[in-house]
Image (cartoon, rainbow, N blue to C red; front, side, top):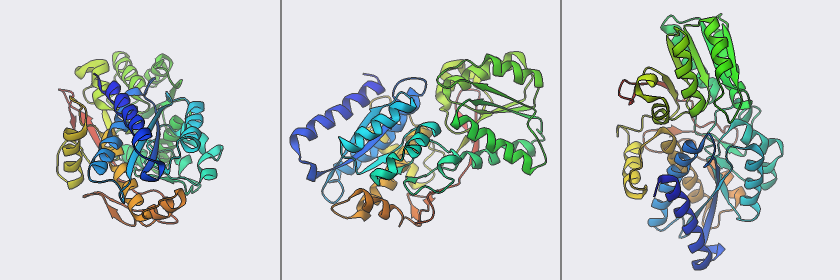
Length: 379
């Protein structure tokens, strides 16, 4: 059984067993809408896995105030309308007390536009997006544990300029996610008296990057910042290197380097930079990483691999569970939101986060990693 099938089986069985064995008063429902199919399926799989292993651990220890966590997962295929429909379903029909780990700036942005979270007075913890439109203006329903795309862009541009690379282009997904990253790069360059030499866009839910390759190759930049997901990043990286002398490619944090290597091979992926907004999950140098690695071994499916994505949602699950604990034995949606505001600071294990009534951006941590010659990610 592959990991995606295992996740669906495990979550499905959990839901079925709870329906028979316990009443609503004995459980806490946490909803997660994630892309388990489509172009972001590998990312969605890891997002669900990271949250699930921590919830499994908490349940094995007796739950939260004696209540078991029921992790309800729904597949939106990275489609905005499905995100909205399924979020409403998990709130209205499943009775979720809180939400965790959705993907997509445009997807979550539509939830805000339609006031789905606001009307339900429900918290969404650890969305897998750094879009500034989800952070400004202030939105009380979303608790971000990752730095924003503007923070990532600043870190990337700072690193490139330090290496004397000032002719910079951007390849981006033509949607709110991609445009948010593009604006971040433009702002970071403007701060240094620089401008983009070229931009190339591609359509969401495709890897049709040929036009972006053509435009950027013609401009001959020293570096290209990619605001894209796994398949489009892989396709663009391979194609641009075949027709251009671009020295450096670097992507924001939403890609899975192992998936890039799988798609185009270690030689084609070698040297691609990837911004990261979480501590390095492959070395147990801080307590939360050690805890994550142990729980992956104990609760993950056979053959499951460590990743930044599953680690990020593991951290998100820790944050949410602490909020549930502080909300008391009978947590309501409003009580959970108020409890999360008290995590100021909250150290998950060597990685501090800060929330308050006026702050929902828990971290601004950014570092740059590089895919090495053997496909491994290097700091």
